[in-house]
Image 1: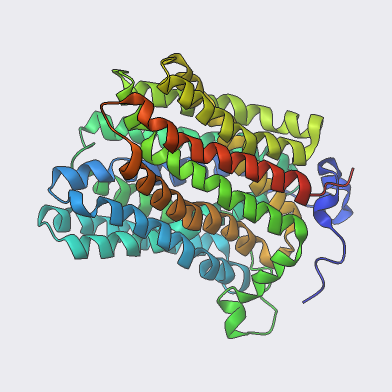
Image 2: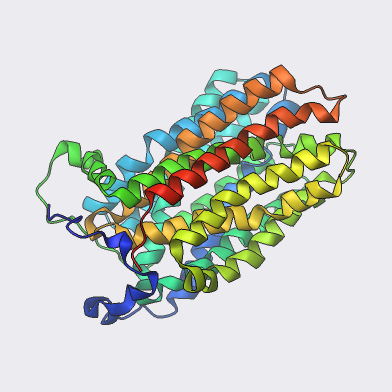
Amino acid sequence: MPNCFAEEKSEMSFDNRNKNPNVESQILPKFIFSRLSILMLLQFFVFGSWFTTMGLVLYTHHLGGVIGLAYTSCAIAAILSPLVLGAIGDRFISSEKVLGVLHILGGILQFVLPGLVAAGENNTTLLVIFLYMLCFQPTLGLVNSLSFHNLGVKADLFPFLRLFATGGWVVAGVVVGMLGYSSTTGIFYVAGVSSILLGLYSFTLPCTEPQAKSSKFNFLDALGAKSFVLFRHRGFAVLMACALLTSISLGFYNTYASPFIGSLGVQNVAAVLALGQLSEIIFILSVPFVIKRIGMKWALLVGMSMWGIRFIMFILAAQGHTWTAVVGVGLHGICNDFFLIISAMYIDRLAPAEMKVQAQSWLIIAISGFGATFGSLISGTVYSGTVDIEIVQSWIPLWSIPIGIAVVTSVIWLIGFKEKK
């Protein structure tokens, strides 16, 4: 393999992206932004249609005891499968075909779940959820890499493309709610149908030939082992470390934000949390302009450090200033967009062509895999040992931990990441 780290690619200014004459000569497929918008919307419609209310459905059908295991299995799947499937996308099969097959297989598995849940089959239900997530988790990285590949010289439009991800998540919630499926196994049918439709749609996308297709076959390479060379690059290694730490804080938020806000006496918790989705739309639009003004390093620092600010808002809310909890939720957009989206953009610039899918997969592994697992375990332990549902102030120790994590992450980023001007 050529030495893809002969020069520190990440040290280049972000605005130098189009100076490569080979990149400038690319001809974009017709209507590609519109086609990728549909892809992004469907991807997150599938995700949002079942993932957010799966716990409620399991609880309603007397399977409450396996809710924690179900979500933990999703995180484990994010550790195991993205790298292997990413290697297949980089080496053997076009990304859109891998994406299509995975979503069709996933849709079939979703149709199996209603019967298992209704029958109270704990272990089999967990197994099928795990198998489904083995199929789904790699698609998150595949959609990112496929989008960057097809946008070509227009890759700076990726933040606007991500607007449709937020839209898909919101539309899924509205559809499930209108159908009255929030606490029923109907969510699995919605996910199954939409997943199969997305799988079929994936085959209509422009062909993205595997960049390492001509390379000599090696079993370890096929398992994604060669992608570990990415960690030789200082910028990539620091980013992965910070992604892992930040996603631990995300685990705290996803698990306990709603019960905390409810403990403050807020009646419509769902409406308050929806402000986070609204703020995503606003901040996504600002990403390209912020990067041009302050650079990628400082934009990412804003995304990392704001996680600490949001939990300071939660602590103030626990001390009687309830309105600050709303501010904390409203920061969801800048916390997510300025970190997750810019991270994906940075990785696309850094990774060599033959490893782009695997590089994006590492981001999914760090965030949805290890980070989600650690965040769930740590927050659950702290919650059990400190929080009293009758005492709002008892939440303060729980929210103090991600504040400390945000401080450590920011220091690591400032010291470890070098951005050449």
